[in-house]
Amino acid sequence: MATIAPSPSAGTCGSLSHEGRAEPCVVVIFGATGDLTHRKLIPALYHLAASGRLPNTTALVGFARRPLDDAKFHADVLQTARQSAPRSSRAESTAAFADTRYVASTFEDPAGYETLGRVCAELDARHGTGGNRLYYLSVTPSEYTTIVERLEAAGLISKEAADGTGRGWTRVIIEKPFGHDLASARELNHALGAVLREEQIFRIDHYLGKETVQNILAFRFGNRIFESLWSRDHIDAIQFTVAETLGVEGRGPFYESTGALRDMVANHMLQTLALVTMEPPVSLDADAIRDEKVKVLRAIPPLSPNDVARRTVRGQYGPGSIDGTPVPGYGQEERVDPRSTTETFVALQLAIENWRWAGVPIYLRHGKRLADRQARLAIQFKRMPRLLFGRNGDGLQPNVLTLRIQPDDGISLRFNSKVPGREMEVQPVEMDFGFSSLGKPVAEAYERLLLEAMGGQATLFIRRDEVEAAWAIVDSIRRGWDAMPPPQFPNYAAGSDGPRAAYDLIARRRFAWTPLVPATPRGSPA
Ligand code: BG6
Image 1: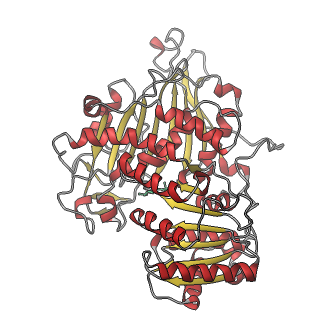
Image 2: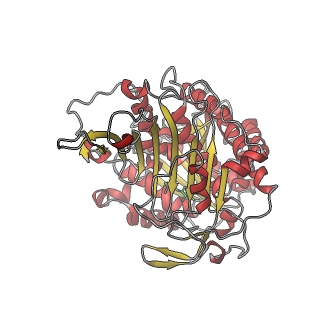
Image 3: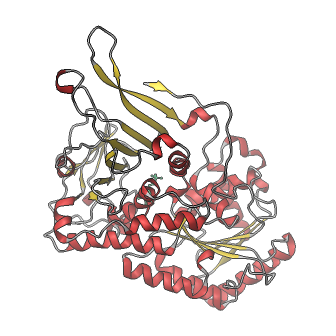
């Protein structure tokens, strides 16, 4: 495999972000004692603060039910941060935030919001945070509406903030799922829209914070050779796999009501696909990019019941082994119904009905407990006529461009080369570029996204109409599934490469999934 070295003269030509220009503010985390806060938010905020990328006046307020006080919350933050901080930032990490405060309250109780208001006012007075607030709702989605309504009732958020009233800005970050289907997403959007302007709502999708996902824009619109081939005239099929070796990791009840389609396809996968297939935006502004994303999402027609039967596959893992360690099936996971019909695997064939993509099949595949962890897009180009090389041109494989989102982030291109010797024999070879060759650390997605929100940059967040366009697609699949007899689960073994039906689906048009691990046996029910 040939490797491509970076050219020494890097140029910056436009920016997707205000990175490095976060404004002083008070960050309030609702659900401050929860899992996401410990795994992602505290480590990300702490690392940003300790490495000097946040203003040193940044204050942190935790808001949760658990009866902690300021000192205990501070100790908890320190412990979480120390466990996750890179060695280099540990020394100075005790003083990363200007202040750490805690409000113990339910999310319903107005008194908790009054206390929060007092605490934030004190922090403004002490640290000059100027009324700027970033509210992070790290809670179950059913609590979003209550929290924003209580915040508004207490005068802590307003649509007017940041428009010259001198009271500072207020922004709210929410985590997926943004509703459960189109109807509930509309309801949620309506409730948020009643108290916030769309520019104040930051719907986080951590895939958009991944460097390799952002690189899709640079790659597509910074390279003439690829962009000029980027259409149905030259591309035969697109496939996108997000495979995980992890199972549901103690999140049984959440997963039971969500499933693979809603958990990954409705957001991460459709968002990434939109970046790969959208038209060139007129600028790198948030709305210019999001306008193009929503257009392409709307060009994906909802699936009819017949399409669902022919173009979708769902799966659920049975017992098996991952890296040689036996693991239980989904039905045996903690707090999961042993007869559950929730899917842990999904494979789809979608279409994009526009001038650029009409007729090009788009294959998506995602599953838990598969043979390998990887997120990869493979763009398969049309074949050359098989006239010149080898016996009937047998050795002539189509060109494939692979965008590796994780791990081993990078891009590779498969093309055909002559094999040295007297015969005109050709064989496929690969050119490879690894992100690591740029010699810069790759920022963690949450760090990047938090900085963007603090700088008021919404490009990497999902807009209301994008959420609704994605649900229209996903709902049509769910409706089709609900109308069918329940599937025979489990239908793939943990540690395999998924159900056989997923292979049949893609083989119908004579394509094949990129193997997860070369020469992995196909999954069969355990
Ligand atoms: C989350 C899903 O949004 O993304 C999880 O809820 C999934 O089920 C995770 O495991 C995958 O993220 P990543 O960054 O590890 O690919």
